[in-house]
Length: 126
Image 1 (cartoon, rainbow, N blue to C red):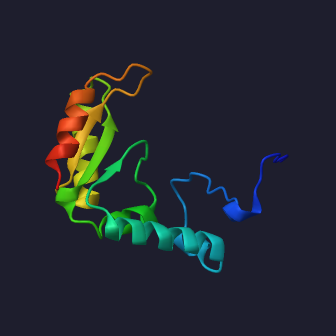
Image 2 (spheres, helix red, strand yellow; image 1 turned 90 degrees about the vertical axis):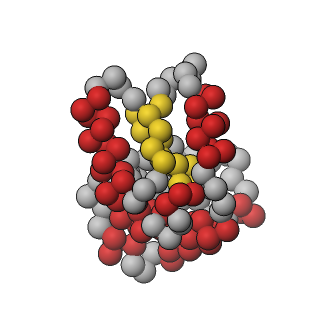
Image 3 (cartoon, rainbow, N blue to C red; image 1 turned 60 degrees about the vertical axis):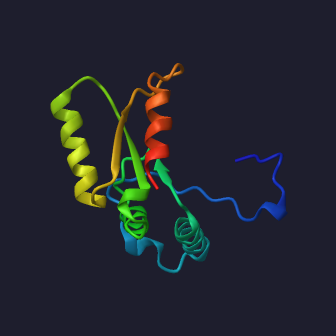
């Protein structure tokens, strides 16, 4: 990969590929990744609100980190595809993983509908 704008002061670039079957033990001994997870946990500890957008929550490390945040401070946005049964199943999966978090169905598109609902929901979580 050719990187023309790399600045060494920005740290070490890293890519963590998405994988629903990711093995948590595969991170052992990978110091750069462990530092990133530590930084995430520190940021979550300081956060007053956490919004999760565009993540399927199949990563056990991320779910574990999010569980450290009080559930009433977390908003998870899920894809709203007009299939009530599938949407309710996804909402249940999220609450099974994280507890009584706010779940907001969102249409992901160039012209997002319901931005007011998103803003109101974010104001509603502590």
